[in-house]
Length: 271
Image (tube, rainbow, N blue to C red; front, top):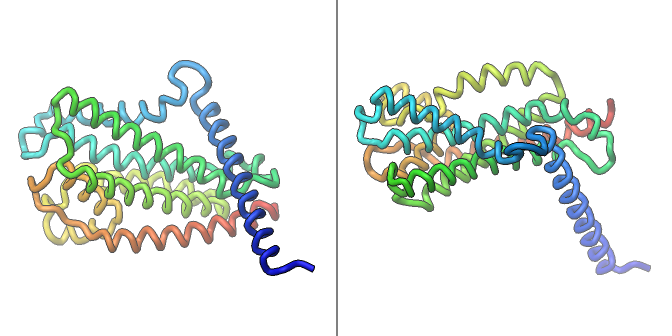
């Protein structure tokens, strides 16, 4: 006759075994994803870092050549790094997850591969690549003395982690929603382009008229970009953010995304 203790131990063992299986599945999916997207030759997985780095450097070069660095007291290279590294992280994460279920449909028929494993794999790769690019770019330009080190590193890290949470939650939501209709992916593509200039990458909230600022601050990612730049630049301008509001938005997106992921799994199994 089993005892309550035996039941608890059995549940614990089963949970631990499930976590180990999921860890191996995500590890295998990650290796497959890297090889499929980047191949085994040339830079390979380094493109995860190189792609956002090249884009950010290009934007910084164009802005510098246009003389925009003379129109404000903010260093234009640091402004580009903080803005475009940030927007590329959440946009690329959601973009890759919007294609995740369709591109991996054959793998989802394996018993141990779930929808959430596929999405977590792509989220981890995109956020890891964007974060590495952001760190490498910052170190390079600080070492070259083109920009100053962040004045408040912990504030930068906090803003970046909140933005990573936002990107992950939105990626779960959009990625799982594609199981209902392919229209979701097609709608997301133009939506991402519209959100790009509105996300805080190319402006400071304090530069805007009050009415426009209040509208744009409804977008959660703007708050994180403001926090990251405050950590970099200090009191050069007045910053506008409400991280409690962003946390509530992130939590709502996370719960919605997890519910959709579970239901998407049932839909895939039923097909």
